[in-house]
Image (cartoon, rainbow, N blue to C red; front, side, top):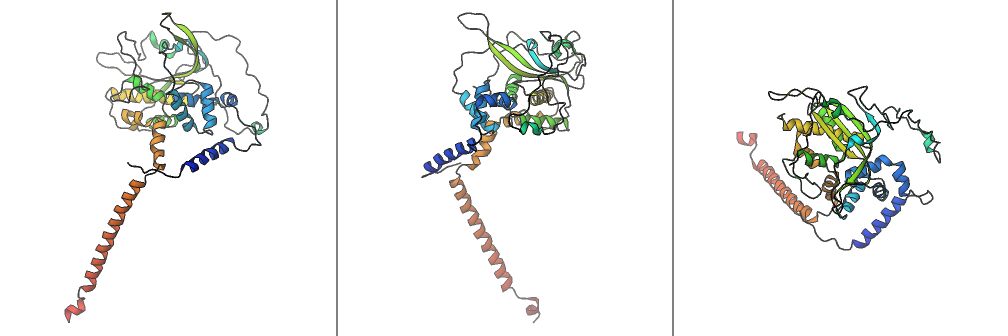
Length: 380
């Protein structure tokens, strides 16, 4: 690939930036959105930008959405770019999601799961009908949700602890001599990828791409149709151990969505008792579709590790990880808009030469036909 210098474009580019800002603002007669409004009223978009941008900061994500005119991928790109400028002070302690203060928790495996089902705020049972009352200025008065008569009990057992006494569900046992987790934000993608690297890549992968892959596995390209053991959304404490103190202190809270998928068929072997497989998904904010898709893809990739034929995209580690990052994908596709003048001129010369040779051969063939005697001339 080659480029030539673009001369005389500075003024056009500067004016394009001004025009972009004008389009972003829209009609000045309409009140301008502020970051707080986006953060509070477009919270799911904010959560998606945080998740795919790998940076937990609601105000930053809301600002990016405003600056990007609502283009989520562009907002993710901005957050990722800003993230690279931030210093790193260290790593937090592992999060304990059993202690999550769950706003929502549902299980498709047990009706009466220990800890209970918490429906929480969800679109699941809405009718997907447009509410034109929201189009009125100021919307409608919001009726507060009723509070439960009994407070939620914490810690809330997770699906793993429910199965623990029978060892029916695959577990990820912590090993004291395990190496530090792979850091995809500082190390390039490599293959074969460990599960830590895969989960990192999926956690900041594009929700639409992951959803499509998970769907393809359910429709036959991967033969994966797991069961949702548990999905929970809520807030967990984040702890950090400063060197000068040597013990963990709480530095904040973080909202997360966690999903555990259970494979439909029991797995086992000669030396291992049958048990259910486990796919895992964990993402920033309230992103249920993404955490479910992530855990389904984790299940498919683990099955490939265990010897299943890699006969579908969802089981192909390189295909999944290399194409799930929308910043890279968007950059690679959109670079086609950039000047390719030298490439194009080289191709143009080549195709003109090929066309000239083609027409020359065509003229020669027509001349040969014209010069050849006809059947009547041969008989005479």
